[in-house]
Image (cartoon, rainbow over all chains, first blue to last red; front, side, top):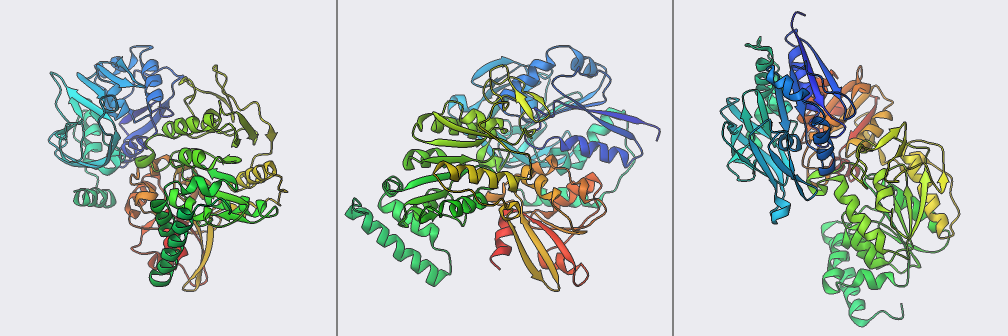
Amino acid sequence: MSKSLKIVRIHNELLGTYGDQGNADVLAFRAKARSINARVLDISYLEVMPTDGDIYLMGGAEDAAQLLSLEALQRDNNLQAALDRGAVLLAVCAGFQIIGNSFEASGKKVGGLGLLNIDSASGSNIGKKRFVGDIKIKSDVVGCELTGFENHAGYTTLGQGVQPLGSVVVGHGNGDDKYDGAVSGNIFGTYLHGPVLARNPEFADLLLSRALGGPLEPFNDPLATQYAEWRRKVTK
Amino acid sequence: MAVMNFRLAAAIKAAHSVGSLSRAILGKSGETISGRVVLSLYPNSIKLLSTEKQVLLVSGTNGKTSTTKSLAQIVSSLGKVASNTTGSNLDWGVANALMNRAPYAVLEVDELHLPNVISETNPKVVLLLNLTRDQLHRMHEVKRVADRWRGACTNANATIFVVDVDDPFLNYATQSAKQVLKVSFGGRRHPDGSVCPSCGKYLNWSGGIYSCGCGLTNKVADRTFPDGSAGYRNAILANVAGEVVGAKAIEVDEKALERTITKHVGRSTATIRLTKNPASWTEALRGVDSKNVVLILNARQVDGLDTSWLWDVSYESLKGKEVIVCGERGMDLSYRLHVEGVANTLADTFENAMSQFPSGSEVSVLAAYTAFFALASK
């Protein structure tokens, strides 16, 4: 194995409520299938964030856990430093909100990490409903449709310099029923659980190629393809 | 029932007739329809039907039905017991069970219906088993359920809450209840317990013991027992709840508290266990003792619409076994196993899955909620 890949799962004990930890497993699996020496490193709330990771992952959480994760990430500048080096970040749901400029949790508005120029509001504060159900988006960034499951009350608006991950075909996404997620450089945010990389192998490969800095060797995994195509077909 | 008013009596009569029709014509249990009829004709019926009974409620994420059955058996030494032992645990299931004349009622209650049923039945005992991730499309968040319970527990001054205090969510929910009987099994790490449900700080765990700066801890308990399986813990909790109303404890039979049925399929024998969320899958996987395994996954409402939680469970213990996956969402599970390196094959039906084992095989089957009941009724 020549190349190596360090996947950092951020605060899984806090950001693991909706199964997003599987994103790390899928990345490692698809990397190893191409003889890349991939390993998954879990960094808890109590530990120092390494700066030498290649891909960083954040998942969904309940409000109190979301605030704790933010607090830990604000202790140092390590995640920012890793991203400045060109590392890839995928942040889902609560994680997606944390990396923006601001969001609302436990009834209060808080400043986020500001890694993405987005702002999130909580629909429950303005009497809006929670979005729960299957979601499908058409992503030009990934180059195909993506499916997942959304379960959130977040309304996210995108500022200058970021583009959506995709346009909503089924579901609600960022709350406007038009777009889901946000992308800027190697930073990706989305409301899609599933986990999103298990449902959408093309997205996993995009993150791997960004992290490795070049095209990947082909990897034919019929079960992954069959699974992704089936979910795209039935999500309507 | 001397005080029963005429309208309620008429409502019950109508409910019984509709229930009989449902049984006779549709071949259904008739419980849901009877309960719905009595509630629609007399919305206050749960409250009124409870007044002359000593009511014991059972709720929690896992083990409600089997523990209710066990507790009903324990309490039956004192007198006749009305109970919803088939798992019909929403308002109408509760109403239907309460229509039976008996001095005691032992009722299984759905987590989200519990606050309402507590306020309507004014129970003597509420037994809370556990609270973990389940059906998040409906529950949304574990903490949200705990918050609702907390509100109901705080107001129920006449009720004795029997709780497994090793579960921080149960401890939090009953923190301001007037009467609590805390049971500990020596501590156990909670899969969703990284945040203190009471103050929102990072919860400190030392092995299975949690202790938060705000005071929430399982270091203190009224009764302590050795640790064991979920079935064992629920059997003990049922005994403790029974003792509160003066019933004698029965022998602990943890196997009886696992939701398991045995079926002969072709020439093989399937031991089918109910599994429904990360906690119950993890528990059930520990109990797989056969080399042959069938896993059935559905994702209907009661199974949970979102299958993401499959990735919160480790299936590593199945490596080297003959694993066949089926069910409406079998492919979700098959791919999850594939990524963990657990070889498996997909089958389109349970019968086809079973037919792939040699004649005379013993097969361990883990079945999602709706799949379990479909097989149980065959």
